[in-house]
Length: 353
Ligand code: ADE
Ligand code: ZN
Image (cartoon, rainbow, N blue to C red; front, side):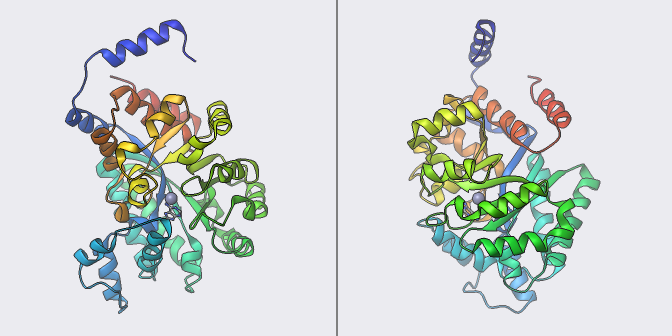
C-alpha cells in the first residue's frame, strides 16, 4: 500500500519518541476531532432527564441521578434500548430538544470535536405525538447558536427505527420533506437481530433519490450478512459499528478495497457485551488490516463516556500508538460528509507534528 520511502518515514515517525499513556491521552484530547456516530437521544444525561421529568410532571422509575446511573447495567442491545426509549420520553417541547442538543454541542467544544454528524430518531418522538416542527426547531436553534458562537460544524442524520415497518419509515421520510435542507443523510438503528437491512430497501432508495446520503447500523449484534445487506441493498456510504465483519474474510477484503468507513464505538461495544472486555476489542486488528475505521461514542450518557473517553479507553486497554491514533482521527475526517475542501484543511491542520 505504501511506497518504500513512505514505509521508512512511517517507521521513523512511529519510533521517534514513544509517548506514555497519559501523554497520548492529552495529545488526542487536544487534537481537532470528528464524531460520526452519535445518537442525540443517547446524550441525554440523567440530570437533564430528571429535570425534564419534573418540568412535565412525568413519573420515571428512578428517584435520583445515582439510581438512573445504576440502572445502566446492560446485558445486550435490547436491554439498553428499553431504557433509552424510556429516557427519551421526557423530551416533549421545543426547548427540551434545544437543551439536549445544546448540552452535546458544548461537550464538543470542550473536547475539540470540530465536526459532528448527529443521528436523531424521529419515530421515537412522532410515535408519542411530537412532530418534526417541534424537535427540528429545537435542534436547529442549538446548532445555529453553536455555529455562530464558536464555529461548530454539525450535520444531521435522520435514523429510521428498524423494529418498525418500512411503511412507517416511508411516512417518516414524507413528514421530513419540509426539513430536508437541514438533513444530510438517513440512517437505520434500533434492534438489529431479526430486522435485516433488506427490509428497508425501498425507503433508502427513495432517500437516495432525494439526494440524501445513507448510513446503517450493521454488524453490531447482527451477522456479517447484515453488513453485506447494508452495502448491497441500501447502498450505504458508511457502516455504523460493523465489528462483526471480522467473521467473514470476503467481507473484510471487500471493505479494505472499497474503503467504506466503519463507525466503531468502543465503550458502547463493551457496555452492550459485543466484547466482554476492551482488551478483546478488534478495532486495532481492523485498522491494521487497512479498513477505514473511526472512533465514536454512540450513546455517551448511557455508555460512560464521550468521544475523548473512547479514545482514552483504547489507550488504556490496547497497545495503540500515536501513529494508529492519528490514523483513526484522520479517518474520521475522511469518512465525514463535510466538503473536500474542509477535509483537506483539517487534515493539514492535524498533521503538523
Ligand atoms: N440506537 C441508539 N444506539 C443504538 C445502537 N448502539 N444500536 C442500535 N440502535 C441504537
Ligand atoms: Zn448507534
